[in-house]
Length: 186
Image (cartoon, rainbow, N blue to C red; front, top):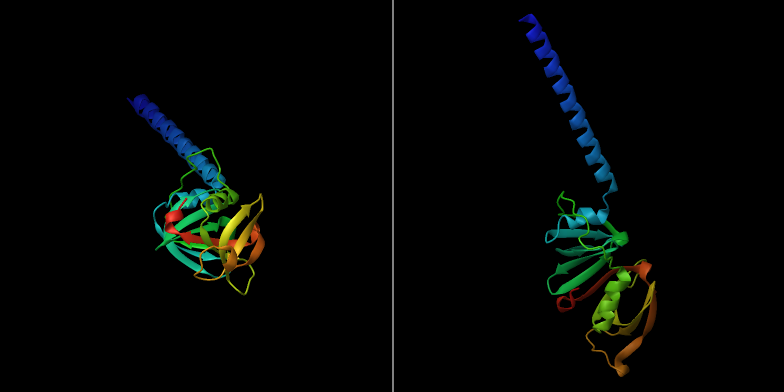
C-alpha cells in the first residue's frame, strides 16, 4: 500500500510539473505574439469605438474609429471624415485592449487614401505639421508617391478657376490630418 501512495505522489508531482511547463510555454508564446503586434493592430481591436485622438500639433479630435490601415486611421466625427496618419498620433484614448490583425493582405497607404479623395474631387481641409496658419482648404489635383498638389480655395467657395487662391505642393509626411465631408468616407 505504501508503494501505491509513493508512486501516486510521484505521478501527481510529474503531472503538476508538466502543467507548469505548459503554462510557462503558453505565457511565453503570448508574450511573443504581443511583441509582434503593431499600433495599428491595437487600434483595429477598437473598431467602431468612440475615441479621442491627440495629434502631434496638439489638436484633439473626437470621433468613431471607422478604419485602421498600417499607415493611417479614419475617424467619423459628425458630418466629417478625418484621416490621421499614425505617425502624427501622439495618444488615442477610448480604445480597448483587444488586438486585431489586418484582415486583408492588401495595404492601403496614405497616398492610396488621398488618391480616392482626389478622384472624387472632394474638398478637403489639410491640417499641416509645423504651420501657424493651421488648415489649408482645397481640392486635391494630384497625388504622387510622397506628395499631393492642392488647388487652394478660399473658405466656403466651390472649385472654379476664378476662385482658386493658388496651388500648393505638400509632402505627405507634413500632413497631420485630412478632413472631408462624411459622404466621401473611404
